Image (tube, rainbow, N blue to C red; front, top):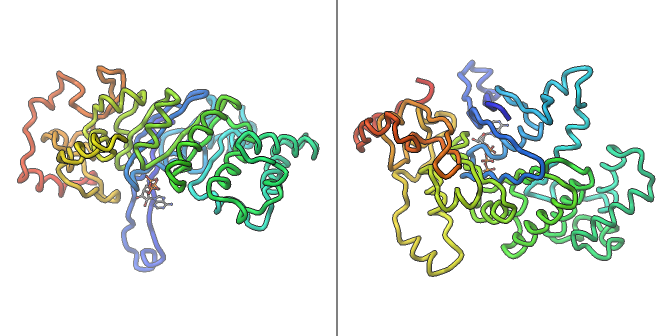
Length: 361
Ligand SMILES: Nc1ncnc2c1ncn2[C@@H]1O[C@H](COP(=O)(O)OP(=O)(O)OP(=O)(O)O)[C@@H](O)[C@H]1O
């Protein structure tokens, strides 16, 4: 993804009728991200920061309003619109799969597991015989622990637990032999013990089918577990921007962006004593409220909440740059020679005057 931007114009029936101005939500703003083969990238951020929109854009389900999204060098949207693209849009769609948060909603309640799983195979792998289809389905069901597979294959979705439904959805994605699976809050609805099991399973199967994962979670601990275990990257999003990205363990041990420090503070360690100590410290943030994405703050979008913000942060947008730990962060503080260090510190008075300024100014 290169300089991807997704802006939604929210214009309702009444707005049209009364010729009122529309609200534009800047769900994703100028994000660039490469996902490699057998890669794992976990995107984390508060609700509404644009994770799902960015994920859907990555797999071609959301058309960006700016920038480009390429699959193996082929622009996804040009492939859809052009007559003879190098890689067909069909191939791209098959290679980029999704697992939703709500597995129940993505399985047809009137069809058996076998029927839910064989349909996409019939469409994408028409050369397979009925027997080959059945064998691959049984094999994968067994692989995700649904034994005996014949029993599970004949059940309807309501005869499965939440964890089992999520496994069926994972199998459905894997049957396509995808290059990338977008797992959007794929484990959030499961019990804590099942979450770890499901994440482990995803990583085990990753090796089997050589796929990559773009894992989305509002929960820092899940993202941390998955990305750390896979040796992948964690990307931190804030109000439509990617503010920090890098190897999971480095980002988590040495967060360089002030917002990553907030997320780390808000997700205490598993050790109850350390967790208690962490909760006794003040949150490293000035304002708890997240600004409105329709009217995001000018400059660095985090400046209204950032304890380190200076005057320059209120009007100049920091770009992602490499930190001394090899991660990338969008904060002036990563550059020792930046004019940020000469810029005036924000006091509560000038802060409240600045927060009225928006990116529309
Ligand atoms: N189709 C749409 N039309 C208008 N606004 C949208 C649309 N989809 C998302 N948005 C807005 O874009 C912003 C980002 O939404 P998105 O769902 O990507 O966030 P998120 O980080 O995935 O949130 P959550 O964790 O709650 O799912 C939100 O302000 C949301 O209201």
